[in-house]
Length: 430
Image 1 (tube, rainbow, N blue to C red):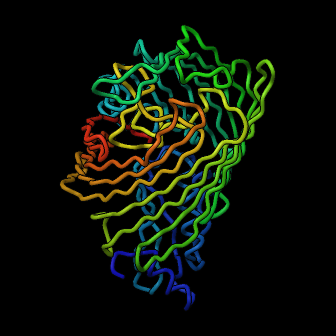
Image 2: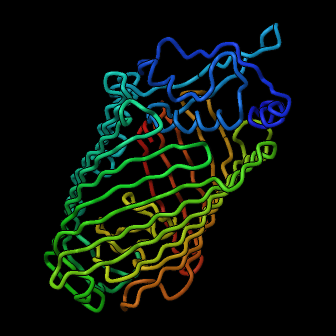
């Protein structure tokens, strides 16, 4: 179990080991020591329990200022151990001007800025924002999050999201394709909620959202039937839980699950109510005893709606920067306008990928990741959904530069034969 700390702890705990003598954190960290200390469930002069370690790790992640961290066990001459936190901290606009500029301007090639400010006054308060001036899909978003009552077990967040988007519903992102429908969609959303990190095995979120939407320059065609174009204010409650089903430390294998429920009312004429359900299973396996080379991940997601949902609440299966349900050979925009990926009320999605480390010197890293996506999306309205299963395969090149991630994707649609190329950027905090 060389290099596999979790597996070693699992068996050490059976004989009431390892005994902790000291717990230390880097002196240069700007986060308040008392706040960070409250994230640790272990303390000096105690046994380091496996459950306490993984819960502490989950709460450190929840602080949102440590994109990289590790609890290192150092053996002492007396048979006891010191626990040392090794971490890269996000503070201010970034640790230096180059990373701050790279993070902010990482999306400039697609008319987007990502201004962020982390760890305000050392209190793990983070402000993330997005500014997009693309004439086809303008967007301004500000996300504020903070520990609740200075307790890393709970975190609250508030989000404001304003969009002005032109949509063109077409059956493909390239080649000859008829225009099925089109519209200009304007949405204003204010949301907020509280997350709880109860243990390393499960966490939860409860929150709410109020939104408004307007449709302009509508060409209904055969797709945008009146029941989809619901206008007016919408009030929504959201509940989510994530639960770890299985963890086998000695095999470095993990299965986790998630479930989200949304209930909403929209004050249209007449008013409507609807529900959205989503569930997920994620399997993650590191085949080597240490390191992350050849990491394999398989994720399955399902989604279903009940009742009449407005256009902006439909699911999308496709590769698009505002969407997280990826079919990586189905690009969600055509000529800059959204609407070229399948939309619908119900879906199934499977994403498999494997990461191969190619190069990493601490400042710059490259991974190659072959993938296979399979999906199905349905809707009772003609022109929405997809009549057949979708199958995409390809390869991703994942670059890391000064902690800022870039992902270049090549995907091939196994049904149509279309080739897709796409570039995504991740800010330093993601």
